[in-house]
Length: 508
Ligand code: FAD
Ligand code: NAI
Image (tube, rainbow, N blue to C red):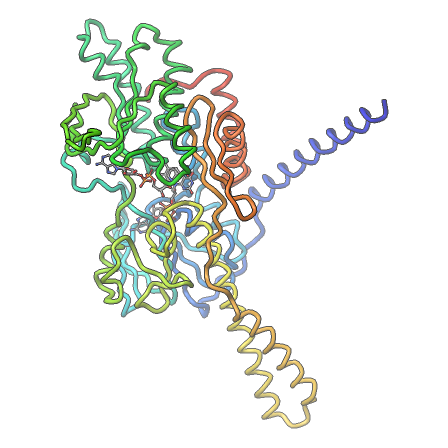
């Protein structure tokens, strides 16, 4: 029938269109247009960090208006929402990394990148001190970079609350190196547990994976870990599979405290089905090389000590300040009451400073430390800086026009006056930039067995959903959000590869 013919044609055209679009994107990435020459008379805008905040700023910034310098010890952007999937090899780590050099090269105006750590900021001299902390160093590994405008987007460090043994014995889950370490360690525990004549108690310890922190990082990692065992390890090493256990320890009365009550209950019941043990109201106090020591609050209000022997310990208890941010806060008197990061005003200007802005996890603007907030802040700053450049250009134009009116007799004063008025109106519109406003799109988290939970903003309300459909929504949302077409194709390829062949369990 005609309807099928049309449907077939429509499908054919959309598939063809998608391929043409992908091909065009790849061509554009591989063959960027020549950049405009560097102009030293432009203001120097220094951006610290290559995370969510800084890269969102860079993406939307008209770099031809400034001399842009990016400084970060990491020469790539990392798509953190898919990092837990790298710990089990579901996704290969390079699939969620985008080299900062290609981001810089894709800009119309040139961008300078230094792979270095900012060690201090001198707000009076307007200088950033930078240090090359990589393994290979040249003759110069410490220097100064002057700035006219500075954006601090250095993120945060892992919080340990000074609990003894955490730094020495646990793995974190923040950077690519952490995910690689966890992946290796999981297989190390498995292979050592399968070693000939291993004592029973030791097998149980080695196959006990403990996660501390029931926030989204801890929950997503526990879910991925359980999938890995059920989908792959159980099939390949059945002898030890029944001994494998995952335990999640959380100090508060429930996991995922930032999600709605309904989704917390759904997550906890799904974890029960997945046989992931949750210990809530349990505060870890000490970590040794083989045990986690915690204090659990019982229903009658009394406390008891609990010891968890472990093979792998992953510590996911949130964020704390980076030393650079702590030092900056100490040197700026207006920051003395701030505890969680650089306090910023509604235009993200660091309070008590001029020409310094902060974005993301290192800034305190009244929002949660998430990628969503950081990227919206970065985009806001790009708009602000683009407008500031346009403002300067228009002000200069008004000045030129006004002086021609005063100095050159014979110019058509009516038309010049009209142009001045038009330019002033344009200028007013640009200057009228509204303060930063965060628009929450929702929260998503993977909880294992192809299920996810989502609290999604819908018109003026909120829709809470959990299950397999939400999992497909989670996957498609993140696939559409990864940085580039290259990342998108690689992630898709990893998902298909893992489904067809299973995860690669070889230990590097
Ligand atoms: P980051 O992205 O951490 O970037 C900081 C940058 O600064 C890095 O490039 C770093 O190398 C650089 N840097 C560090 N020190 C210095 C220095 N001294 N000088 C110069 N540069 C420096 N949020 C969500 O909204 N949704 C999610 O699904 C989600 N999933 C997550 C999963 C995991 C496993 C983790 C750990 C976090 C997740 N988050 C998620 C939170 C999100 O990743 C952070 O809120 C976000 O990365 C913050 O962005 P940022 O730019 O402030 O910092
Ligand atoms: P978090 O701060 O959200 O959670 C840490 C948890 O650890 C808290 O619930 C805390 O009570 C618990 N804790 C602290 N000390 C403890 C101790 N000694 N013993 C036991 N429990 C202890 O940290 P997380 O999960 O790393 O997230 C950081 C930020 O990144 C958050 O803003 C989060 O929303 C965001 N994120 C979002 C994701 C998503 O939307 N899917 C995924 C991962 C992170």
